[in-house]
Amino acid sequence: MKLEGKSIVVTGASAGMGQAIVTLFAQEGASIIAVARRKERLDALAEQLRDAPGKVIPYPGDVSDPAVCEGMIDAAVQEFGRLDVLVNNAGIMDDNTAVGDVSNEMIERLFRVNTYGPLYAMRKAVHVFLDQNDESGNIINITSVGAFHQTAGVAYCASKAAIASATKNTAFMYMEKGIRVNGIAPGGVLTDIPLVMPKADAFGFERTSSLLTHAPELGVPEDIANAALFLASDESHFINGTILTCDGGWMNL
Ligand SMILES: NC(=O)c1ccc[n+]([C@@H]2O[C@H](COP(=O)([O-])OP(=O)(O)OC[C@H]3O[C@@H](n4cnc5c(N)ncnc54)[C@H](OP(=O)(O)O)[C@@H]3O)[C@@H](O)[C@H]2O)c1
Image (tube, protein in one colour):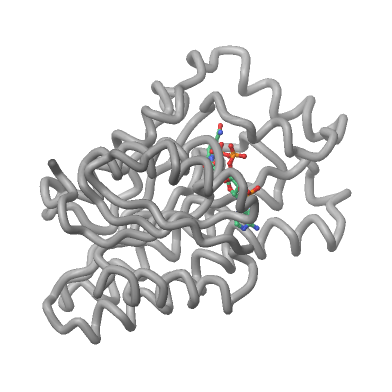
């Protein structure tokens, strides 16, 4: 097992990629604090994985609240004695709006979940890693091809570019302390995310649709979970400050 004995926090664990990451990590022996707002889905996931080699503890909460981001890291330390890996996966899409029409509400909502949440969680995790005083610590941020390619509206793309930049900055700042920080930039992946997307803006959708013409087939959440497993495991110990693109080649078009 690749994650035996590791204490891991995964956000956005109630659906899509986060659920696939928790499932794979539990099968690989990890002890996991699983975070999302929908408690009943987290409870169902923990029950489903009851016989897995690892352990899953639901932690219901909204990652745009700094107290939740701090509390979920504290929970890992209380339950499992330490923190080894933080996976910032929770995220929401916008409605494809271009900057000329974007509302304050849309900008604020996207940044609160996609950018502020991961920043609050990284801040807390870094302190725990440093206090453990054993030159370890591993953060994986799920960003998006939208950080580099115009696959959504300005609020989504900018919120994901910000966290890609924060990934590289944090990797640089703490590299001499043994803390690794990497990102994954998924392309189109078959999840529930379109179900919770606001209704698309006509102009923005027309612009971003042009990129879909030659897009590869959608991936599945397990494709991202496999990449996350590699980055969470010691096999990737020499990888730091990288954004791993998992998009079937979309960014290469
Ligand atoms: N699917 C794609 O094509 C794609 C492409 C590129 C990047 N991504 C990124 O990949 C990540 C996972 O997306 P997905 O496709 O798996 O989406 P999803 O199926 O919609 O799942 C999103 C997860 O995030 C949680 N979440 C949303 N807002 C939250 C909040 N405020 N606090 C806590 N948890 C919250 C949701 O749980 P609750 O609703 O229960 O809180 C859910 O567990 C996101 O960061 C997304 O931006 C997705």
